[in-house]
Image 1 (spheres, helix red, strand yellow):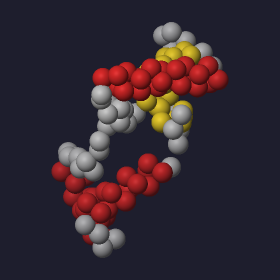
Image 2 (cartoon, rainbow, N blue to C red; image 1 turned 60 degrees about the horizontal axis):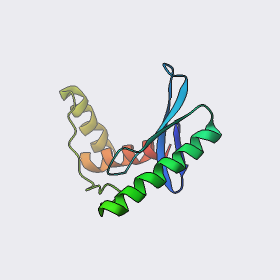
Image 3 (cartoon, rainbow, N blue to C red; image 1 turned 90 degrees about the horizontal axis):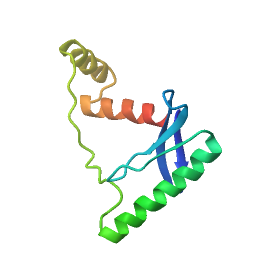
Length: 111
């Protein structure tokens, strides 16, 4: 997966902040913000580990569940023409729109 790194069992999305000339990482799937900056990949891993440790310790201290709960449901708004095209594509594969969208998302997320 592009621009994703795993640090201590948690995944973070990476980007480059050209304004300050540093890499930025932000953990996803957590109940709060835990981001970190560094000028190299090695330091990014170190800073990410520190940031995650501090975040998890704060959650323990406050009795907060550190990870977000995902319900498996979300709403999606599409242009009507795209909606129609998706229904046709799903039908062509003998799937409901929900099944088809779920499959497409799974394939994209695994890439």
